[in-house]
Image (cartoon, rainbow, N blue to C red; front, side, top):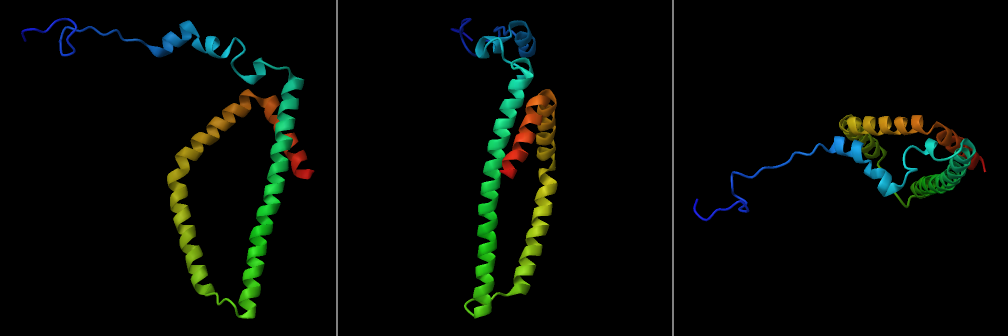
Length: 153
């Protein structure tokens, strides 16, 4: 052990200080310095009218986009199925419906297995979303109302 000093990384005499990060964060409130004094739940930052307006506008935009994308997806799926039926009826395509049914049932079983494995992650996401909605109920209710208006427009 000759030649080892206090700066040697293999020295057994090194002393480490243990820092409790939760206590440090409580004492120093670093998030206020990083994000400003108005950081925290949205209910603490904006008036009820502002929260309703922000939620309503974002909800309307999401609902409008959801409506448009939904129409396009429904048209694509329905049109593809219609073309497949016309091609099948005209003799261009021969569809083995027994094999299709077997494959669909196999896919359903596979999805059920995957759904049971993914349940903890889904439950965690649902709990986090519920907590967010509870903390920001005014914003969330504005979003839901705006979403339905966006779907209707």
